Image (cartoon, rainbow, N blue to C red; front, side):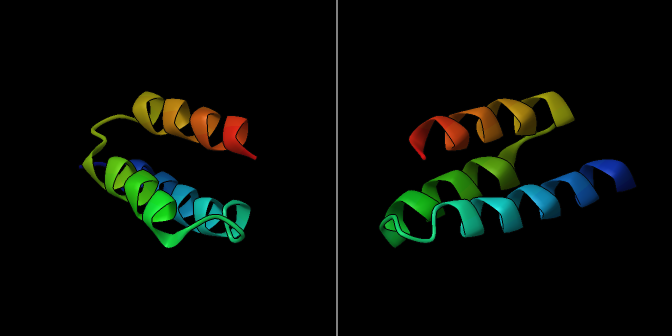
Length: 55
């Protein structure tokens, strides 16, 4: 796994927790799990788009 992908995932996890702070923990965990399972930066980007649509 590339270093860039690791950093991008970390950013996405942090952003998800901050953006969804008022949502139930189960919703946050669902997105975090998807981010951890992603294999490309494009997958992480699609997940972040979904997070933005929720808020």
